[in-house]
Amino acid sequence: MIKQETECNIELIGVFLTRYNPRKTLSRDVLTLVQENMGNKVFETYIRENIALSEAQSLGFPIAIYDKETDKQNNGTEDYQNLTKELLKKVKL
Image 1 (spheres, rainbow, N blue to C red):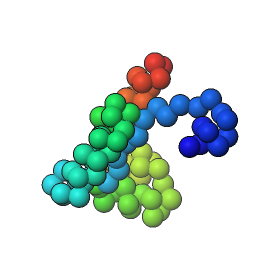
Image 2 (cartoon, rainbow, N blue to C red):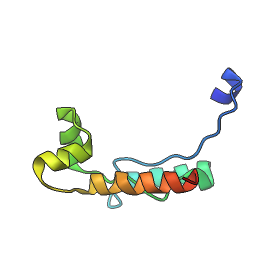
Image 3 (cartoon, one colour):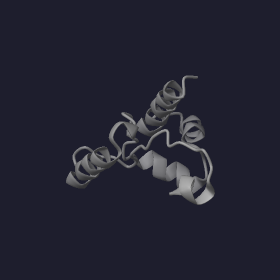
């Protein structure tokens, strides 16, 4: 729709899920629905549900900075690092 409305030559690289929790039926259902509608545009990396992401956001910190402040690495940081690698691979950088 954006492409049609703006007449710009843009392309969707992909979509990814956040707050994903494979133990929750809703998360699995959303994943299935997104995969059915977006096909190969769905990134393999999901951002898992993680309390540290919420804490970092409430403090106004990027998750990587929050990890350094708390001297821990959590799933959120790992997931976003993996997503970045996957994105760079898709755009061939």
